[in-house]
Length: 233
Image (cartoon, rainbow, N blue to C red):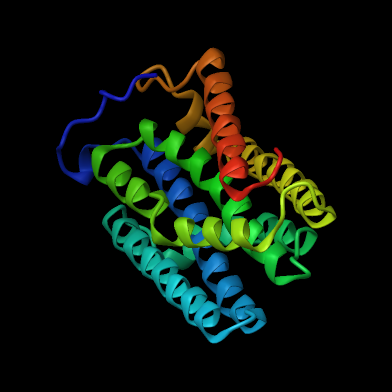
């Protein structure tokens, strides 16, 4: 995968086709972060204790800070936050309707598994963008205190081998299938993002073998994440 084709020059040095792809990547990531912020804020009311409510609200605020971080880069690329997010609202909202959590633990597993698989996918695509955009994407999708909290709470809330553990494992497997399908659909449906992934004559992207490797690495990380949660992938 060629990641050395960008210099540290000005934004005017980037070709328009590339900029459109970078804006798409940032736009879909921003809307993912915005919906995570909204869902965590709402889900906090289902927390069994005040500490859980405070924690989810705290992490929701961090997700919204990520939206603002992305917005700064979008402005540098000549776009607005709303314009960049708009093409992705339908597919992401549809995914969230299909995978609406019914319980506190389902919500925590979703926040870890579904958001994690999407973050892993966009972390891989960050290899294909300019250094400044790559820096923003990697900062937004970096695993931090929220991931540690989600894993700890789920692990101590379930007993291995119980019906609840089996049910949540099944839920996690459903989430990864839905999230991967959505991420690939976005890349396929958006010409600019598709060209970012496969590249052009002037700007090579990933070949078919590398795309397969991306999906393999994302799936491996999902399996590891499920194991840390105490669930079976």
